[in-house]
Amino acid sequence: MPNEGNHPSFSELVRISARIGCLSFGGPVGQIALMHRELVEERQWVTEDQYLHALNLCHLLPGPEAQQLAIWIGWKLHGLRGGLAAGLLFVIPGALVILALSILYGYAAELPWFAAIFLGIKAAVLAIVVQALLRVAGRALNTPSKKALAVAAFVALFLFNLPFPLVVLGAGVIGTVIAATRPELFALRQNDSPPPTAPRPWGASFRAVGIGLIVWVAPMGAVLALLGPDHVLWDVGLFFSKLAVVTFGGAYAVLAYMAQQAVDLFGWLSAREMADGLGLAETTPGPLIMVTQFVGYLAAFRAPDPFFPLLAGVLGALLTTWVTFVPCFLWIFALAPWVERLEHAHRLKGGLAAVTAAVVGVIANLSAWFALHVLFSRVLEQRFGGLTLTVPDLASFDWRAALLAVTAATLIFRLKWNVIRVLTVCAVGGLVLGQFV
Image (cartoon, rainbow, N blue to C red):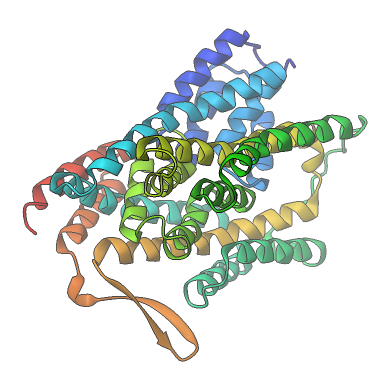
């Protein structure tokens, strides 16, 4: 499928996609900027308008938008095989690194030096999450109505403990209504360009959905047939399949919900270990949602029957990665032919604007959750009237984590260091301060 820019060979697409996959540190903002520089500015494989239209589509979809954008670019340039190559190469390098680190963590987490390194990494990630919150807020909250929606989302999650999917879907409904009745509240603009006149590509979309669903659920069918519905792998696959459908707004938006379910409902890992997993994901290339693989590994590693722990953990990690990322290919292959038409879907844009605003509140909730579990060794639940609030045990304040978090914030906000340098400095700092228990 040629475009108006330069058209690479398939082997060249594979080579550059592998390069992007190995260099895609820094979360979705950095990854989207990297692809723009490599593919739009330097090589001109897609035009600026094509890139922005596709990015708008990816923001509408659940899952990591940067990976979905990579899939779309591959599809635009070389059809199905191009989308598969670009999407897989965006994920595989980070997945292999996270798997190796998860295996190491499973065996070494209790060693003092290992825990000390993660003290620094978690403190750095706290500053990184706050940076992400400020970035998203600066981009998304451009009207008072959006700011009010962000505050409402934070209150609903942090104070009232409402389910994450309900908050996000509710925001989408509100945005759709506002787009139809009072679009000025969200500063929405009509697309004045004429809509496409080509026939609607229903056939291609239905085929993509049908094949994608079969590929997505196939491993779950094998787990059900061989191990039954009571095995941990079934729980892992089912939970992360559901999560893949509601991951609007990127990984930061869904992490607090995932942590709550994995820690409190399933008991697969502790809150401290969940924070460690986010630290691991920040240190590796690829989508931040790859932290799901860490959770899936530990869940199966600790309930291995009938396998031995290492094999069970690897199977858990692979299953988690499969059910998390296969839907990304399904969404793009089904909706890519509709990109230009979706630019005229005014109500859909309103829903997206509202979800993006609510995501600011969701990330604020994650920041609060993460700060509590990084800066305090003990976190308690207390009832105040009809509310159940998570509060820290002030006596468990960790001055080392606080010092490292302030250091990370200084490096990020004042000195403008990149993520890898900050993580490295804080990991070394954690190793040093770990001597002071």
